[in-house]
Amino acid sequence: EHLLRIVEAEVVAGDGGSAVVCDCFNLIAGLLLASSANRRLFSETGCMHRLVPLLRLPPSHTKDDARCVELASNLLTQLLEASDADGSGDGASTRDALHRQGMLSALLPLLTDPTTVTEPALRVEALGAISVLIKQHDISSADVASAETTRKHGG
Image 1 (cartoon, rainbow, N blue to C red):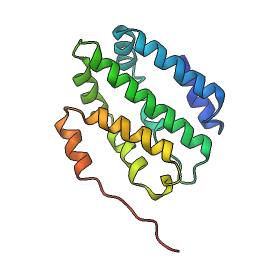
Image 2: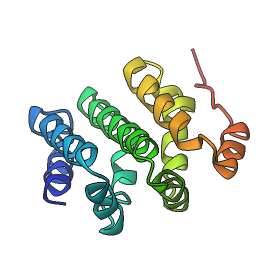
Image 3: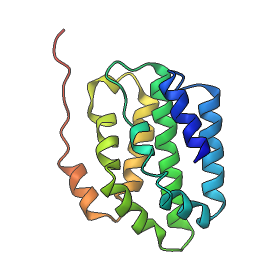
Image 4: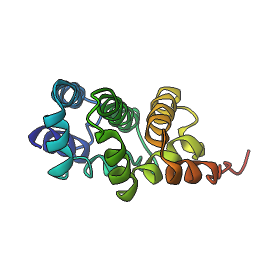
């Protein structure tokens, strides 16, 4: 929770792509990958819900903003893959919780919004997170199937 608070403070300060943010995401990932108890605690304390705003790019985003969203997407992917791999059955309940919290609606614009076309690494991470999120989850799969792409108007 403290690490997420640091990330959120850095994002508010405009330093979303800083080394501090990158280190915090790496530490969070290390803690979550270390044990299913850590993943369960992360979910139960509402930390997972706090990832949703970190996946939303501001309309006129910077490279630092994009890097932060890329790191958050990667963390989500690692969290879901670890939940699937540990055999505890937490993967399905984690997907349900993430769907209810709007995680998919935060990720889809990263692929479909024309402002992210210059951020290929961000799009790759978002696509990876979406693919793991919708794995064996019919509601999320249907949401992805009905997603629409917007086009940039002009020149």
